[in-house]
Image (cartoon, rainbow, N blue to C red; front, side, top):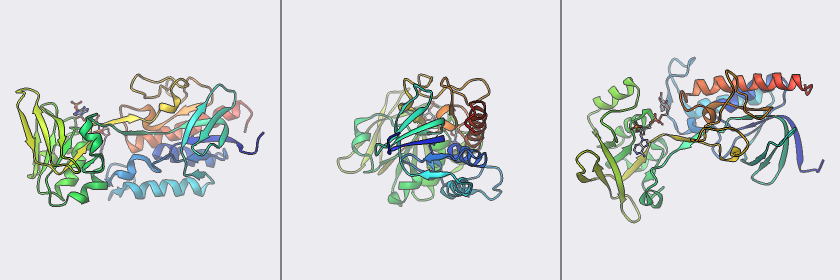
Length: 314
Ligand code: NDP
């Protein structure tokens, strides 16, 4: 085997709660897992503030702290964590091949996919042009820059509610653009949003254009019922309209929904390819919680262990 090709028993792709939990279980089962973190080590929890619904933390915990703890726990049992991206796979079999960004080739007896999901964008030209110049998908990361200024948040789910609440503590006014006449967010988040005096919900409203040349100067919006257009005076524009699974590199290899979410078999994490298992948000468009991602990461490691035992690898 060429020197730059490495053989591993268990390759884990992705580093959110699913990947790290898979690593804890795989390492403790002596699968000597190698985990590639991808471009955003820790995944979406790195751009979250308080996580209040993960069991075991009665006072809540900060997302980045939680991911740091997950990583340390995985490393404590011998997981080899590498801060690189897997950019290509070949699942022709029987050994599964993967390539890193820097061109290194890894051959794996089993693969656990835990690549998660990323924020979606509206797709407006002005949104692209003004990204990082006032347009953001992360209030926790960028809210600070808009202290004392009016901002807008697009979306009506829990993410949008969380972003609006976070920004309401920094900004005098938060405009929330909701395309329907109701929020999709959980009841408790809806209540918090509607009770917050400086959040104004614009119902049935969609953004048409983000105004400004070098920075955001306002939002041209339309009421999709009355068709009336208005200009919302916001200097920051936060997009919080859901997520897309990070599964592009598995296209053509793994069965997936048209939306890109990986398809697993029955109550397992097995994919259509023997020895390849899927966990976390990459395969879950319904629950998408840190705790459910961790649960499926655990399942994937147990499935991989069983598979490697059957194959006589361990
Ligand atoms: P969701 O898919 O739940 O919500 C997306 C929101 O964006 C919806 O209101 C949707 O409108 C709106 N939307 C989608 N596309 C567009 C568009 N092109 N233009 C305008 N609006 C649009 O995504 P979230 O990221 O909010 O949440 C994902 C999951 O994560 C959920 O299960 C959620 O409960 C969970 N979550 C939990 C948190 C917590 O418990 N603290 C925090 C954050 C997320 P419509 O309703 O009309 O489809």
